Amino acid sequence: MRIVDLASRPDLLDPALNLGDVGGEFIYAGFSGKMITPERFLRHWARYFLIALDDDGVPIARALSVPLTYPADDRPELPEHGWDEAIQWAAHDLMDGRAPDTLCALEVVVAPHLRGTGLSTPMLKALKARAAETGLKRLIVSVRPIGKEDEPDVPMESYAFRRREDGLLADRWLRTHERLGARLIKVCPFAVTISGSIADWRKWAGVELADGDNVIPGGIAPVHANVERDCGVYVEANVWMEHPF
Image (tube, rainbow, N blue to C red; front, side):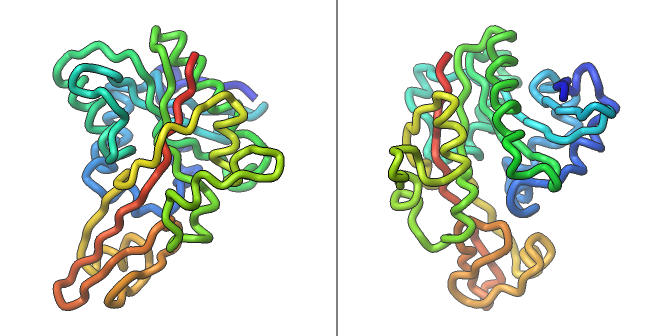
């Protein structure tokens, strides 16, 4: 396996994106998700779009990240709005010409037939290496715990801090970060917020929402719907973790 970036191999954009998504496709339907289009990554953050290739040169994993400034006088703490706000920080810094010092990982996606084989670990290591190579000081991640899909109604504060008998974090994706030296900083309760009509959610998640809380495929929290008002709102908590160098 070897890892390249989009800057050197722009021809791999579509094959890398065809590996699938993290959780449900609906994650990219929010305002922040719409900001990180493939075209913008190719134009602005191509060095931070990493692609793993097998021996035949076929993409088998991707890792997306954006550079930003943190901490700063106006950003003393990691944001409560997690993934959403980190993307906005990166966009603001780009528009303002502000020099970044931190890399924020947005997603790591492995080819379906290789999931569960540990390939996410070298992708995270590659992100850390790329951050160091480009003069950044830390890697932060608004982690979306994989196992939370099985317990969408459990508060993240109760879920995220569970540990196994050996002392490691119980969730396997949180545990992967911990094994690489990452520290669990805090829960970000509003990491991803998405709102839409009943028809929108039918398109995004393939479900017909009913009044109240609805569990959806790929969701780690329920969608709260009001059919009369034709509205469904999804608010997902994540966990901030930091990989210090």
